[in-house]
Structure formats: C-alpha cells, structure tokens
Image (cartoon, rainbow, N blue to C red; front, side):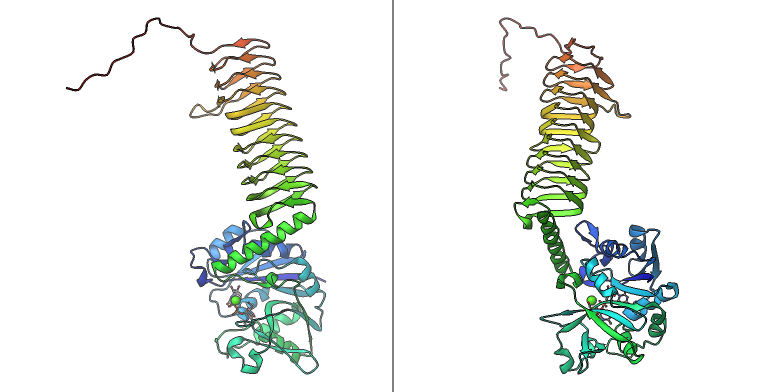
Length: 455
Ligand code: UD1
Ligand code: CA
C-alpha cells in the first residue's frame, strides 16, 4: 500500500504574536513542523506534501529537503481548501493528513490509524475531551457509526454536548480525495472550505469511517499561543525523560532536564538537575553528569564524569576521563582515556592524550598533547596571530610549569619541562628544561616612592 502525507502548515498563528511563522516555533530545539516531518518520515511515505502560506518563504528555506513537496496555499480558505492544493500531486493509495502545529503525534498512533484505511474505509483520529469547546464534534448514528463531523460554530446544543472531538488527523483513500475536496462548499458559519465535510461525503458514498484514539491526548494538542507551546515543551521533556529512565538513567529531577535532539544512553548513567542535552549526544555506561551542564553533539565514553556548570560542544570524552566544574570543551576537543580537565579550562580543537591533565585556568587551542603530560595552572596556547591559527604539539610526559604562554607554532618533545612563568617561543627537545622568563634580580635598600603633597 503506497502512502503520501499532507501536512497543513499555512495558517498564520496570530496568537503567537510573533514575526516567526507559527510552525517554525520550537519544541525541544526543533520546529513544530520539523517534529511532524520527522514523524511522517518514519512512516516511509513516497512523498510528503507541506501546504504553506503565511511565512511560506521562511518555512521553505528552513526545512527544504528532497522528499518534501511544498505547496503554496495563497489564501487560507479552510482546511479542505488547503488539502485541495496538494491533491494534483497525489498518486498514492492512501493519504494521511497531519498538522504542522501538532508536533507530539506518535508514530505508533499513526500506524494504528493507517491500519484502518482501505479502498472502502477511512481512518479518523478522534479524542475524548473533558471540554470539547472549539473542536469539531464526531456525530455517530444509533449503531455508533460515524456519520459526520460538525464544527463548533455550526453545531446545535445537542451536538455541542458531544465530547468526542475531531483531532483533524485522518487517513483516506487517495483515489477519492480529489473528488471529495472538489465538492466542498464554504456555505457554513465560518465561510471556509472544511476538510471535515469530507466525512459525510464518504459516508454517503458508502464508505465506513473507522476511528482510532491516541494513547495520550497531548499527542493531538496543537499550539496556538506561547502558553500552549510551553505545555507541549514540558510534555515532550517529561516523555523524553521517562524514555531515558526506562533505559537505565537516573534523573535527579525529570522536571529539570531537557533534551533538544537525539540522545543514546547506556546503563547506570546519573544526570543531576538542570542538564540540557542538545543535538546528537552519546552517553555510555556509568557516566555521571553534574548539575547545570549543557552538552551538545558530544560523545561520553564509559565512566566519564562531568562536574557542575560545564559546557561541551562537539567534544569526545574517552573512558574514565573527567571535566569540570566550569570546564568548556569546544568543537574538536578529544580527551583520551582518563584525561583530566579541571575548573576554568577551555579546550578547542585540542587532543589530550591518555591520562594527560589540565587542571586549572587554562586555554588549549589547536593543540595535540601526549599521554600523561601535565599542563600547569594558568597556561595558554597563543594559537592565533591575528590572521592564522597555529598548532602546539607536545609529546608524552611533558611537564608545563604554571602560567606558561606557549606561542604557536611550537613543539615540545616528550619528557621536556618548561619553567613556571615561561613564554615558550622555540621548540624544546626531549628531556630539556626550557626557561623562558627574565631572570629575577633583587635590589638592596629599595626606597619606595613617597606621596606627592598637593599643597
Ligand atoms: C480544525 C477542524 C476541527 C478540529 C480542530 C482540531 C476543520 C474545518 N476543523 O479546526 O474539526 O477539531 O482542527 O484542532 O478542519 N490551515 C491551513 N490552511 C487553511 C486553514 C487551516 O493550512 O486554509 C491549517 C492551520 O494552519 C492549522 C490547521 O490547518 O494548522 C487547522 O486549522 P484551524 O483553522 O486551526 O482549524 P480549527 O478551526 O482549529
Ligand atoms: Ca486549531
């Protein structure tokens, strides 16, 4: 059975009060529409049609991809009119209709819905609501068969009392869709072409309308304003947290934990409060992450310990290595096994060998550092001459004294030592001591300056 998906994303979203098109507002670091597209792709459709209107250029620019067909709906004349714009492109047996502002829909729910659709049957996702205000109501006959959807504004009192609401999500036989959308009229309370009128047409054509429900009503919740956006965000995060806990992660507080990307985790991982994981993060067994850490696009091998307030971006931390508190590991940082990075240490495009240490107040940029080398407190690589970047290379078992300036390009061989306070501008050979500072001289009987009187 071939499948195509239509995602409606043309609406304005006035209540967001934003220059950004509604569907580009983020949930968990990805646009709402991005989430819907991500779920749609997991159903393996032959094509995804995205109906855009308000902010069309911005939406297209942000999400352009080979499998997406953007269809412009010039004027927003209703959901039925929106779907009709995509109809000329559709050839598949089944069409699934989704919404760019309903981001939490689960693939499993959609798979259940798709099982309902066939040449003589369509699948409709409905939801039981405590307060159905604003929703289209699902009208059933005496045998419980769906006969129509009636919009709130067109409903009489009895119909408004129905608590089964239309989610808007439905799966229909592709061959019929064009016929139905072509017959829609806007003769209703809102003067719109309602997609929901397709249901009564299908019934009068002799089709059966089968319904499915989401396991969780938040799956079909849209965001019309920033309050609802925040509710979706919190729900997404709780769901993400639960998933990780089920895989063997202890979260000190699932309400103070955020995932904005794809995370894979091992077992017996411990994550303290206010940790944000962004992009692609791989966390192996027995990793401990302290409070207030932001970790983006990084890999943490078995037994890594990250202490409070550390920021990682594009870093790989080897087995048993540790960093922080207040460490900043920038793109291209690689720590080999058991390497140690302490407080107020910044690394960028730097490779720390096995067991190497940079304990305090240090900047290492464009550096390759051998195993067991120790970098003294306050050391910096002067890697940038204002125009070009240069490399600092250190061998194994090097000892860099405190407060060194290593002026790159410079090469310090294995076993070499540099004196505290040195400015190192020349290469150092194996086992040499480099002293790169002015010699101290002590002046006897020094007379301190006296204060000049102003009178
Ligand atoms: C729609 C349903 C209603 C359902 C509700 C669930 C219809 C007629 N009504 O009502 O039964 O209970 O969703 O939230 O379908 N859109 C376009 N182009 C348009 C109009 C809408 O792309 O011309 C998009 C909007 O951006 C939005 C979605 O379709 O993402 C729904 O449109 P909206 O106007 O919010 O429909 P509702 O009145 O909420
Ligand atoms: Ca709506």
